[in-house]
Length: 132
Image 1 (cartoon, rainbow, N blue to C red):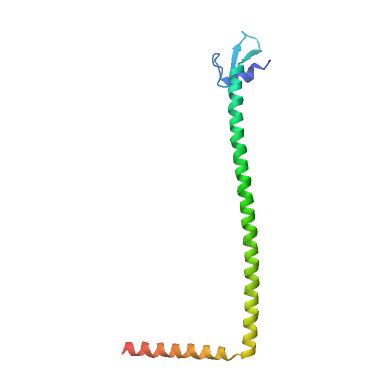
Image 2: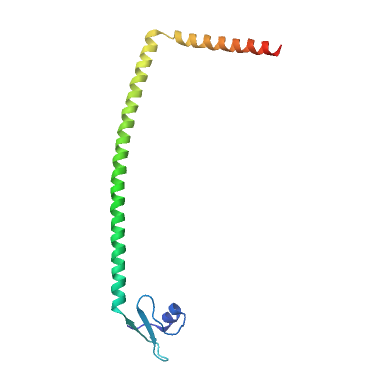
């Protein structure tokens, strides 16, 4: 493998030859602009095995995410159906209430207003008695 010496200097910081964590060993060749790298196959096998384990973990996590997405989708669909049924029930109840109000007349509004006036009058008289 042939590479430019500027890349080696920048990635290794011009340090003396050493064995890298990735299994690569740079070897300087005098004043030449070429370097030689020796790749240790045992280290690569370990790295590939480690990557294989990580890929299996990621696959498992992706499967779990997929399962959770399906569960959440079903839950939201059921919730949406429940909301539609509840809205229909409220709409029907309001329609019945409006029919009953129209049939019985609007006397209930007068009763509510009279009740409120009586309550305010009682509170007013009570507050006047307490001040004396």
